[in-house]
Image 1 (tube, rainbow, N blue to C red):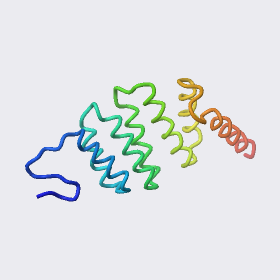
Image 2 (cartoon, helix red, strand yellow):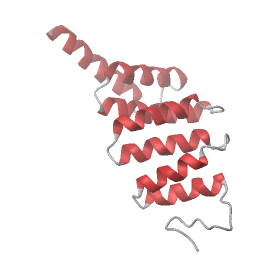
Image 3 (cartoon, rainbow, N blue to C red):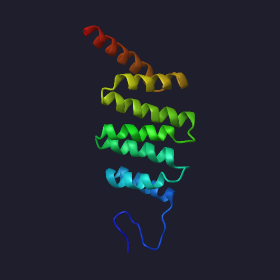
Image 4 (cartoon, rainbow, N blue to C red):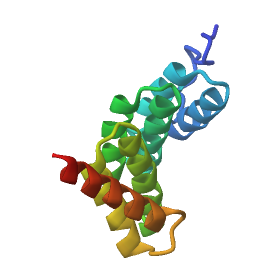
Length: 141
């Protein structure tokens, strides 16, 4: 007998299987169920970074930006991460913070990315635009 996510009473599901199920559920737009799978997958230290990054993406895709931020931060604090993974997670965190209007935190994330990989995506342009916007708002005060 199995439930909607395919758990059976006789089979223990590995964290890697949970992660893969989470990916499938996320692709299907079933974010809440995907988050549950990723949370269980994150119990495996080898999957913690990827699972929390996916949790953050699920929250972001479902419009829950405030919930996405701590998930991305948790992914960044988990070890080990490669520089490439860190930059990717920081970029998505930065975009999320930017959507929330949290400019100082956004700039901090983007500047860290620029130090690691100066040519990464549109980070240089985003820093310039946000810095100008920030200066403009401080002049208006």
